[in-house]
Length: 169
Image (cartoon, one colour):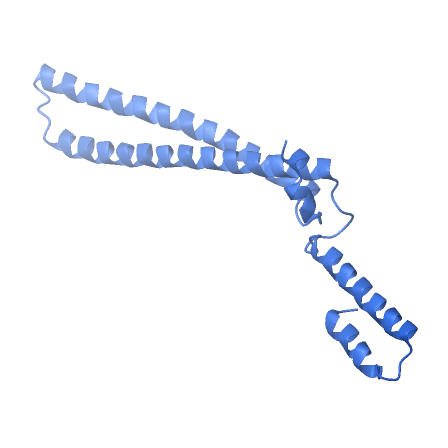
């Protein structure tokens, strides 16, 4: 019963003619309804199923922090990969323009150009290794997210457990 419905119940009684025991009963009912309302507010109702125990809640908090850490790490790698990809594109365009004006009769000019091509090839190899490592991290993030979703997401918990010092350990 909500607070509004319980307050209407009080007005249905004519307090001037009611026996003291009825007034006490009505007040007890209102207090019980208020306590039940406060207890309902202390638990998350967004999720479904049984409440998480404090230990399960600690595990869920740890899983969520781990997921954020892994995601942030993967995003940093993604930024590095994007920078390498842009550099590979720039160097490829520069080498493409340079090859049209390359003096093929000069051994030093050809050696210099080949050195630039070798440096670009090393950058491509590094890029491919970073992409493979990133893909492995992405799979780990997906697995962690799936585990979190299965055991924690949309689960109810008592908010007081979040404030418990033991829950934060």
